[in-house]
Image (tube, rainbow, N blue to C red; front, side, top):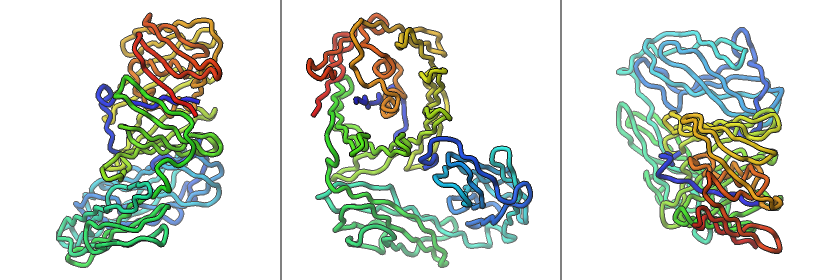
Length: 452
């Protein structure tokens, strides 16, 4: 199986600093307990003061009953300048709670009524804003524990870089502590904003930073440190050199069931792939910050339709916590892909086109913005190129942002193409296994593959 993974960083203007969609495959079925009257067990968190903008500490939790797992979303109306919204997913049924994030600035003090909506259901709750104004109350500080990190043994040291801000005072102290993970570790400077952590072993650690302001109020944040047993975990199944982009050299690593779980590259982010029910649920992109330490830049989360096809990809910038819609897909009745739309992180459209099929082969694209049509021609050889499987297509970020359509013809055709818009394509295969090991486009080497 071959997945072509690359991206033109310059032509697509993608923002590479970045879990809002859960690891589930469809839309959830659930009810708001208490609907259509008072919501059950609404619990607000954080401080609510007139004139003070809500932050990540301002959330509400609500009781729900889940009858079918899947993705969910819920939101409130805007009252007194603030609202709440959330989206994630359920992986089990029964009574559960959901968490919604607050946004906005309270314009007045007092108690206000809100309506929470999820699909066609709704329920009500009340929320109070402190009678004291912003100038008379102490605002809690905000802690930032930094970016999630990953290292590979034998390296066993990372630097945690935290910070704290206080809107109405100063930060008086910092305290780091481990709250989860293996017992082996050493915090060198636990009372400093930045600290080195030594003697780490394989596993996933969580460290919590607590900041205290000059009036004793506290804020907390956590950071994850993932320590891999080896840099080359798993089995090398295929190496890809993408000649036209650097070159890139990708090494795919598989688990015991044959799923790609990690991809390493000479000059592209480490990619960690997560699955739910044998479908890709998310891909994490980890960037090198030097000394063998990686940080998680963004996460792409996958949403599936009722037929099990990827319907959209949501991207989250893990540094700024900014999330946006990356791509939308539609399908024909035979589940072949009908159209694809992709977006810049600003929300403006990047690509919008439809696929054309003839006798089961992908034979062209129609650009729905310019109405241009691109044509693919084939020869009569049998189908031996195995990278036409849609699940592996979605591992390839190049196919999300490919404005030249070149990579996609190897995922959705049932034969070898010989020309693309009358430009020659050459596929050279191994005589024994029939696996391709070189692909040339317009007489220039495009991909080279090395198999075990």
